[in-house]
Amino acid sequence: MLTQDDTRTPAADTTRPTRALVASTEVDGTEVYSPTGDHLGHIDHLMIDKVSGRVAYAVMAFGGFMGMGEEHHPIPWAKLRYDPTRGGFTSDVTREEVEGAPSRPRDWRDDRAWEESAFSHYGVTPYWI
Amino acid sequence: MLTQDDTRTPAADTTRPTRALVASTEVDGTEVYSPTGDHLGHIDHLMIDKVSGRVAYAVMAFGGFMGMGEEHHPIPWAKLRYDPTRGGFTSDVTREEVEGAPSRPRDWRDDRAWEESAFSHYGVTPYWI
Image 1 (cartoon, rainbow over the protein chains, first blue to last red):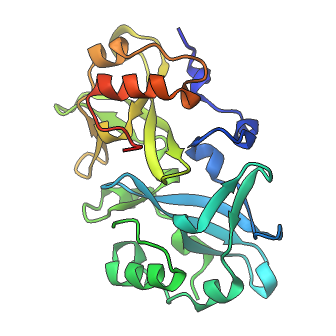
Image 2 (cartoon, each protein chain N blue to C red; image 1 turned 90 degrees about the vertical axis):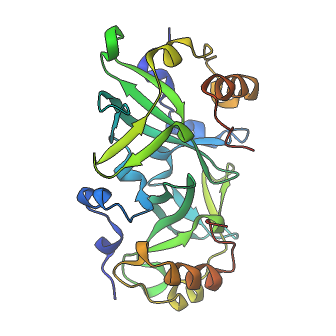
C-alpha cells in the first residue's frame, strides 16, 4: 500500500524532462524566464476553468519587472512552456504585451468580453475553444 | 491600476454559482462530498498536464473514509463537479471504485499504461484525448 506521501512530488521532480504531469503545488511559485533566459517573474497561482478542466491563466507576479512595481497579471497559460533545463517556465511575453493588455475590470473572471480581448491581444487560442 | 491582491480570490467567492474560473490555491483543500451529501474527503492538490494544460487528476485525501486510513488517491478530475450550494466538489466516486482501482506503480505519473487502466476503471474519458 502506498503511503499518503507517495503522491506528493518533491520539487526536484519538476526538472525531469519526461514528466508531463505536474502538481499544482509545484507550479505555484515557479519562476518564469524569457526565451533568452532573463528572469521575468514567477507564477503566483493558476486559474482553472472548472467546466472544461483546463488551465486558463497563470497569474504571474512581475516583481520590479523593467520598471514596473510588483504586479500580478493573468497571462494565458498557452503563453508558457515548461523548460526542464531551467527548472521553470519560459514565456515570450514582453513588457509591451503586458502593459498593453486590455484593462481588467474588477470582475474579469466573469467577463467573457474582456477574456476574448485578452486572448486576442496575446494572440493565443482561448481556453474555452 | 489594480493592486496585486485583485487577482487573489477570497475563498468565499467559490460559492458564486456563475464563476467558472477558480484559483488553484482555492481548489487545494476544498472538501468533496458524495451526491447525497456525505463527506468523502478533500482535494490535496491537482495534477496538471503541462502539455495540454488540462487538469488530469485531483489527488484526494480520504481521511478515515469508511474504515480506510488517511490515504491519498489520484481521482480523474472529470469525476468531480463543483457544487456552489455546498461550497465544495461533488463526486460519485465510491469506496469500491477507490479500493478497486488499479494498483499504482511508484512512477504512476510516467506510466501511460497505468493511466489508461485507471481512466478505464473510473469510466471517464482520459485527459489526453
